[in-house]
Length: 254
Ligand SMILES: Nc1ncnc2c1ncn2[C@@H]1O[C@H](COP(=O)(O)OP(=O)(O)OP(=O)(O)O)[C@@H](O)[C@H]1O
Ligand SMILES: [Mg+2]
Figure (cartoon, helix red, strand yellow):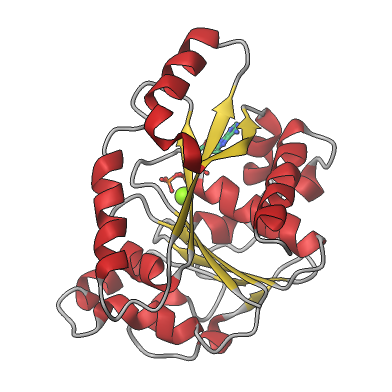
């Protein structure tokens, strides 16, 4: 069994990296074998799991452009069952090099297709370029963190169009299931919450039940370069990501 999950939203700062790290960790703590692929040149997932860029020899751009085997770029994390393919700012240049190439959209799929993990989670950059299309192509599940704020849904229809474009590609190997995850939820902000939920009405069927509350421990864990489950296991952030893992595992009948 293997599920490839892209964590994706072209809006910046909505919780893609926070969700990638903490969902990966929760699934690994449940005994699943998880690989987190950092596909953002900002390398925030790599840093958030304790790896400063320039301290590792290889990163995801070596796999996508230089055809290094993905195994050679893998790092073992402090979390049992969780491995990481780190990123580096050089991935930005790699995306430019890749864009005019043939079969550019399938590089990641080809690189991970033979792997035997229970879950491969891909943290995407906040754009809809070649890297993100690679992630979409390789995935069967797309997790879309959405901030509880006024502009959180801007560009959402472009985003759905891009997914549709990849879905309709006849070479595309996989169905795509999309689910929206509400993040930075604060029950005191009733008017904002009602407004966002109202805007999301057309997407009601793809909204996850779990909401990730606004929680400072998530921020602090990021600064401490570790998942919130090890940084502050009793925090609301840790509880919410565990509830998300539970909801997804139930959804997938695992
Ligand atoms: N539920 C939350 N409560 C408090 N802080 C949060 C929460 N979710 C995310 N954050 C903080 O918000 C900031 C942006 O989160 P994150 O880096 O996960 O977003 P992103 O979508 O990956 O951003 P980018 O588009 O730059 O990759 C970070 O400082 C993170 O710690
Ligand atoms: Mg990020």
